[in-house]
Structures are given as structure tokens and as C-alpha cells.
Image (cartoon, rainbow, N blue to C red; front, side):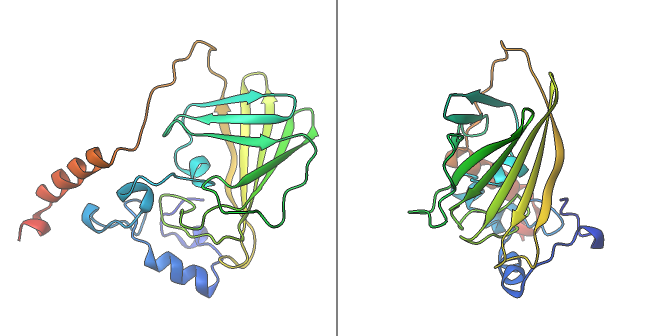
Length: 211
């Protein structure tokens, strides 16, 4: 869902969700602030993006591996991986501890569609680069649908009653194209030292900060 300030893209926030949204100061979207004012933990602290933000903001080159009991996804950004269990287990309704990428269980709906449920995500993360919040009660659904040999579509649905009055679709049939098996995935890491240099340069070039 775009964060562009348009009425048709406004989300069904609860009072708490709106409060959390207004407390965030993102560097992107309709509410973006100057670099020195950003309070995005994934930017200023290089905290992990977590889920579903890895899907909604940093979904770049992605490798998907399948084993007899799981599907493993390797993400380009920060060289992060996650495990989706496909061995028939149920999603734990009371996860033992919060995780950046939560706990994921997948079930094959048919030969071409894997439906993944994830909970137990760390509420310090944002849903996306625009500062949309989530709580520890977030339940995320991903639908990986293989359209043909070279094309995969990803749909992400957010269900978090503490922050939103109803479930909403954050990503709708996002296209993923199969790359050659020899594709070299580049290294893309979050570096605190490099962000500080960027922040310093942006402050220097901002007239408001020179006054």
C-alpha cells in the first residue's frame, strides 16, 4: 500500500495505531523528515528490518531454497535468511520470545501456492519505510504463487487488531522474476559508520541546519 497521503491509501488505524504512527519520523513517504530528525531504528541504529518490512521495502534479489521440511529464504539486504517450516507443524499461538523475523509456518494450498503465516515479530520494527506500526500481536500472511516457470507473485496481508481495525493488503501480487542460476547476489549491508557520513553530508547541504 503506497504511503503518499492520498485518501484512498489511508489505512484503518485504531487510536493506538494512529498514536504510534504519529510518533514515527520516517525518511520516506508523505511524512518524511530531514535526516537528522529520523527515528527509524533500521536506519539510525541499523537494526534488522524484520518482517514484513523485508518484503515491503527491501525485497531485492531473493534466493528461495526448499528442503524436505522447510523453505529457506535468503534476502540480499543485510544478507538475512529466514526459515519457513513446512513439515506440518502448527503456528505457535504463544511464541516463546519476539524475533526480528518472527516464527513462520507454511502450507501448500496447491502445487503452485505456498501460504505462510508469521507471528511473534519484534514490535520495535516498523512495517515499512513510512513508519507504519505493528504490535506483538501481528499476524502476517504471505502467499507465494507461481504463475509460470519464470514468474512468482507475492501477496502480503496484515492482521493486527491493536493497530488496525481490520486486515489489509500491504502487497498485492508483487511480481518476482526468475533470474539465471549464475546470478551473483551483491553485498548490501547496513553500516552505522556509513550512515553517519551520509547524515553529516545531508546536514551540511541542508540550509536550515546552517542557520
